[in-house]
Length: 123
Image 1 (cartoon, helix red, strand yellow):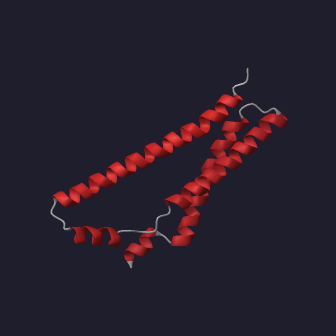
Image 2: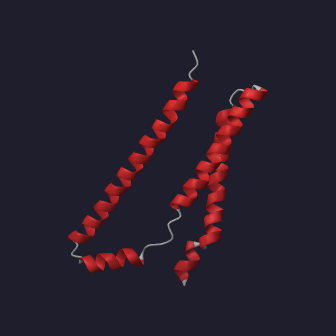
Image 3: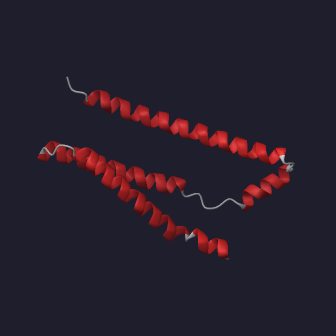
């Protein structure tokens, strides 16, 4: 009995669960942050001005997309190497190497597109 169909079903489910969990945690902390501001006596107008003023470039989706792109490339290459060359352990190796590479590429790409944060804060 092959485990491949079971794994193919579990991976998207696990990713969906992780995505939902991350969104719930993010919403919780945003709510706590806003609640803290309200408890300190900020008016809604001051609160709005604070968040508009401190809102930077949101690069999370760009970085996540690049990392997932490299994850897919690593997974595909790893499966291909295991099937054609019968190299044991090629899948995890390719996944780790390509996710690491994707993280580095995402960092430098967002730095190039949006500039360094230190330079903008100094202006």
